[in-house]
Image (tube, helix red, strand yellow):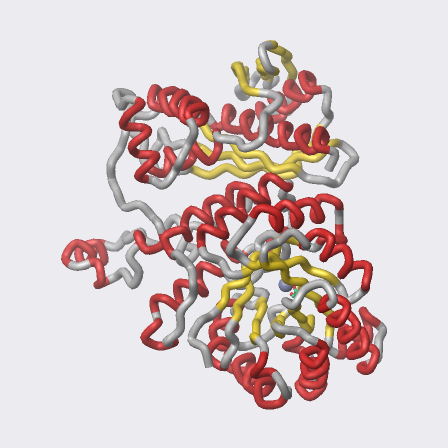
Length: 508
Ligand code: KIV
Ligand code: ZN
């Protein structure tokens, strides 16, 4: 059996099913480019039949991304499969991914199909997809709660029809590692032809066991693992790919397996996904959390100083986390700023560099020391791929315990300065209302979160919020940073409004 484990990333499909997450085509492309740099083997770019936006994103990724398999999801209906192929056909290595449930619960209550109908439908779907591409994956949805003998029959039938990857999802995150490993072994022994295909697993994290289940399956013989960056996805999310990858790497003595991933790209990928989805990474998250390599206890710090291997099983540099304590300040020039950006792995064009440097200087006037995290935040928040309609020119707030909160906001739209004032039941409400008066859109604030980028009273605050037009469901996420949290709120709100306008202009 091969010792290579293929990594299948579904951040753009299952990950995008996380509540409140909605990525546009440009954002999906940006993530796909980074996934390719990371060395992912298969990128599941979307579910083309579900919306024109999904179709366009899969097509754009299929057209541009090279050296990586690009997959599109489809139910076994011919309409789904034809639409998936429509989006995938320009890919260098296209894969059609078909799924159909095989558990009694799903067949009886959701599909209302007999076992025979499920087998026939799955086989017909795989054959249809095979007419388009040699690379066809079949997923038995809710496989972990399926009857093993029946699952073996389904798997044999779809392999005979041409499936080249068989995926076994723990769709509802119900499995337990030992049990799931044994289930995979049972399948390998019970399904004829399984040795000719790649056996894959796709685990959800409802009991916090998605990574452990994936690794148990790999021990049992699975050679493809599906998951998402930062573990995002439906409900409690998918297996966190960075954890799977670093477990296989750090404990290669135990697993004796390898992936094709460039681990130094992990941190940057995690930051990008967090930035574009608006899903913040919990500080104690393994591998990529803010505290993953922080040592607080005195005894630990002492050990670290004597020899880092006392308390560190992975070198942070291995996942691309910079360890420099270098700080910049208001006397640092453009050259020092640019060099630090390069060391941190950013490559900005001249225009982006100018914008980032202006924001750096503004911050350095208010904050004594600018750390690497601050610089990362500046680049992540201030550099926008898509053109922006409105930019914050100024903000004036009057607020307190005995006054009605009032905001006066100036926004630049191209060369034009537009100004409005509004009262609200709090300063953030007043800011949003003043912005709405300028843009003409009436929006509601669906969520608002703040966190500090670094420690200290002068820390940068980062606001992540979501807005929707009044009476509409669709959410738009915005982010903003500043040492002043009201300014950060205004920037985040304007960012979300710009995304909403951008999408309307693109007719998504
Ligand atoms: O969780 C699941 O079963 C899925 C399939 C579509 C693979 O996401
Ligand atoms: Zn899933």
